[in-house]
Length: 240
Image 1: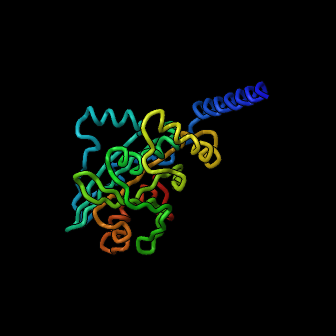
Image 2: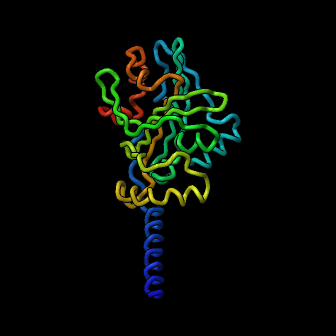
Image 3: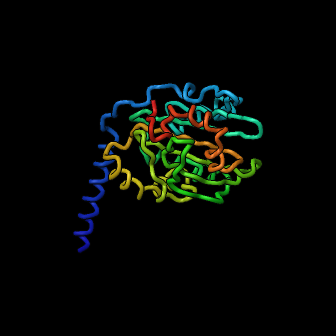
């Protein structure tokens, strides 16, 4: 019996290693998003646009880029009267990172691991801007140290389609422990996206002191949301 268990364990380990190797060396898919993130976050009539550094120093930016391994990233604060929306976008071209690794780059992990407290969470929320249907977004409310409440909508797009987060917990830990915690998600991702896990991906996050559903419903904000169309957050327009 013991010998049979050892053989079974060895076969399972060999199969897992084979899957990892296939994932690492599978050829990258063609790139679908061919633009620059700066062009997808343009000046918007009636709004003040200000770029916000992703990290405070060039050294910190290099560190963040090394950890996250993104191809491009941009963060812009849009203001109109008393309304402010911070739009953050990170893009990974095909062959860069696995779905599970890019998927850990969200407020449930990054923010919670850095001292924020999650107070609300909704999954795959439907929304419309006027007549246009949004792709389902993830919603969370977080208490940010020295920043008060932040209401967040985010999309993790894999090959242009939203990744689902119902199976994730608040605050995946960093390092090897976090990777072990996320192992159950790998099988889900293999079933959803195939052996080649290093898909083309984009993470879009909109945060504000105001409720997300109120921002989306306000016709005065529709021009800004429509200007973000090239990020692929609407059903009727893919990223480009």
